[in-house]
Each structure stands twice: as structure tokens, then as C-alpha cells.
Length: 321
Image (cartoon, rainbow, N blue to C red; front, side):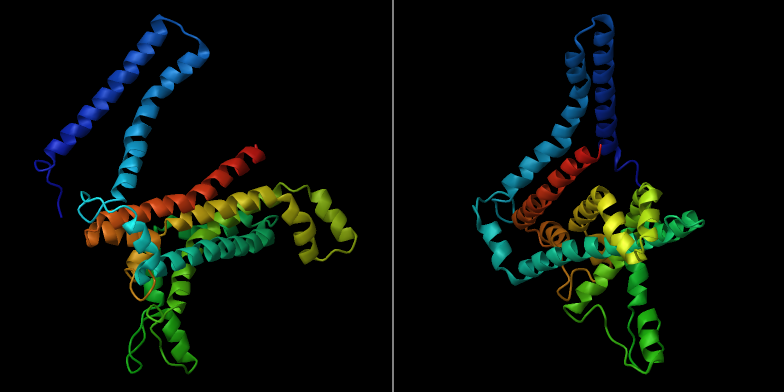
């Protein structure tokens, strides 16, 4: 579909007006500070005012609007109280989305961090660590939609009499097995979707943890080896305690990103076959089924689930400084 500049002219005009107004406000603030010096704290508040205004307009007000919509019906006008929140915990499909989201949040960070840690420990002090880390980091260069398409081809199914185009079914047939519809059979299909997410996130964990491992004083590991410690004991007794703050940061960052998992589910299954998650169910309810109130309630629930992780990550970052 081509971009119609004439049809989009009102929106473009509003955008230009907003940019011009923001630039004018910033210019006036800088001019006022230049002509009349003020205290440092007051100057900081004045300089932060435009950013705070944008945050209020772009985040705070839409958040409050979403909260208000979560107490309304499908049209966003009829007040229904807590009915949408009751629906989330009584509707079978909504409960499946909640269960799957919790499974994603537990399995994706733990698996990707564990695999990334083992990989980082193996290559951190290697001569070829840059090349090795670039290999495992490559999937992060692919969007989640691209990763979903790649793994959808890996799990592709064709009848037994046809030639298999999916890598996994081709291997199964080569070893004498029967091809399976990996993305249809519940609950295992959720695990196959999680594999795609782990594939994209392991490189992130490996790169950060490799940097943390290289920061561990080599004298500690050398002393442990001289005392007869095995590589596994060195990893458990020396490396892990030394990189614990970075390990926690990686786990929290992975968990926060996993809560927002949408693209892989949308691309590979569309939320069918009991694979839905909260972020995808929120989109379906609000924009596909027209249930604005339910979609807003799912968004509020997602925010509430994310808040402890974000708060914990902020505290962890302050400790590492």
C-alpha cells in the first residue's frame, strides 16, 4: 500500500504543529535562563518541564484513560464496574493467556540466562571471544516477527506422504518417525514458541555475562584451580557469586521483555491452539473483537504484573553503580 500524503495531510499538519510548539517552548526557556540566571535546582526543573509535559501527555494521561476504560463495556461508554476484571479470571481463554504468560516469564529468562551463562563462561577468556559472541548475538539483529517466521518454517508440517519442508519434521522422518504438527498440540506448542524467544534472547545474556566474567579478577580463579577446583566448582564458587548483580539485572531485563511478548505469538500461531499470552489477548480484545473495556483491563493487569519487576530492576541498577 502506497503512502497517500494528501489523505494524511491533517495528521502531518498536527505533527508539525506539535514539533513547532515544542521547539518554541524550549527556545523560550533557554532564552529566559540566558537573560535571567536562576538557582541550579530551579533551572533543572525548568529544563525538565518540556520532557515532563511530553511524558504526561504521552504516558500518564493515556495510562489514566486506559484505567478508566477498564471499568467500561465494549464501547467504552457503559460503566460495568469490576466485570472486566472478573472476566479475566473466569473466562477460559483469558485464564489460558494468563497461564501461558506466567510460563513464558519463568522459562524464558531462566533458560536464556542459563544458556547464555554457560556460553559466556566458555568463551569469555577465549582468543576468539569476539567472533563467538557475535555468532550468538546474531539472532538479536532479527526482529521478533522475523524470528517467528524462521521458527515457523522450522516447525512446518506436511502430511507423511509429502516431502517435509520443516527442519524438525525432516529430522523426525529421517530417523523413522512420523511428522507432527508442533504448533497445534497443546501444551507443548507453548514450549516450542518459547524456544523461538530463547533463541533471540540468549545472545543478550551471553554478551553481558561475558563482560561480567572478564571483570572477575583472574587471581581468584587461578587460586581456585591451584587448590584443585574443577571448572564446575570454579563457576559455582567463584564466578557466580562475583557476577551475581549482573546476573540479576539480566534476569529482570529478560522477564520484563517477556511480559510484552506479542510478535512471536502473533506470527506463529495468532494465539490459537491455547498459545495466547496477555499482550496478544489485549490486542485481540481491544482491536479485533471491539471489547475495549476487556482490552484495557488486560493492559492494567499487565502493568501491575510488570511493576514489581521494573521496581526491582531500578533498585538493582542503583546497587551496581
